[in-house]
Length: 438
Image 1 (cartoon, rainbow, N blue to C red):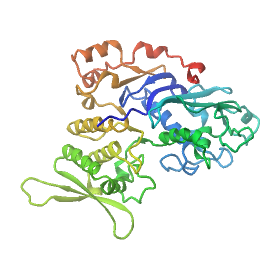
Image 2 (image 1 turned 90 degrees about the vertical axis):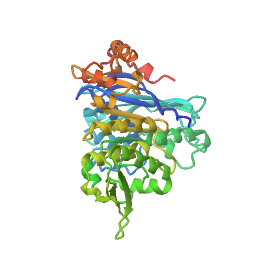
Image 3 (image 1 turned 45 degrees about the vertical axis):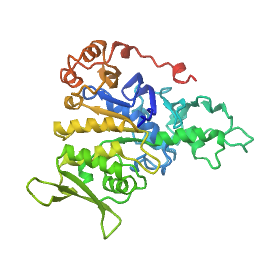
Image 4 (image 1 turned 120 degrees about the horizontal axis):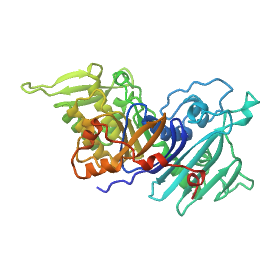
């Protein structure tokens, strides 16, 4: 099978939370390593921010349908407004805490669903008007740009729009309206009667929304789940049984692969998702074949250990698909939590399997997960904190040489605290020109 090219090829961030500046190239699989507080979660959250700000879900929920509580009248009724408010507002998101004129920038270079390279950049800043008008939004879209090779592009600076095609609708004879409280890419993607020239924007928009982010919670996975609106797993795993039931019906081979990996992690274990007769809610029963017994023992999901439930959730996240295929990106926070070291090796195999179909990003503190010759040096992203500011980069040259000579495994170097960003990562300067150049 030919591997699917990674969706995100390069990420540049300036001023987002603890990330002063970073410039990272990504492949189909990346392990984010570094001490607690070094910014791994902030890097993942910057990507999730893009998805949240573009979501076509109801405005008061994020991309996983979690309600965002806001002060009425203080936040624009747009996904961008709720994406910021769900993170504490722009003054909590921006790394530099200043009174006026500060902003953060995120640029992602990508391969669109047809394999064409492109980029999407956004710059969100504080709204100076809010200093004198209490009802004014706290933020504005200062700049936004999307370009696809040999295809359409647009660039917004302040309220000026440039692009090809220059207007969002063929029938529009006036200048397009630029709403500085929401992202223009979303407006183009969700507009009625999108002309053919603008459909590549919709494809890119949809690919961003197909990025999935996971911090699985076994306590909610033990519950009976109502059917999901999407075929994808939710962030905490609450709908895992409904997703598995859908996979068994829609893609039996994928369900069988999940069971096969689970059987290696927990010998003899299989899953039986079902729908409760009294409702449309989904639940699951686990069967475990024990040597010497003719029939497997049966256990309700609520009685399973945290480690087993997390293994099920991670395998489902990695190998899931909906009617349109797998996610564009799957990002998982610390998959090793509560898992036996032997089971962690099974998850690594599943990650290598999943990267053939989707891009996989993993934050980890586990030497056991990385204790393998199959983990390449270019798949490691090292994080460190320099006076509170995040430094991100490929591992330093000395560690790369050690890995190349196979003197130590990545896991052993992690245990020895020898996976550090290269010196080049400390000198990154994401100037505005590089962040918005076509």
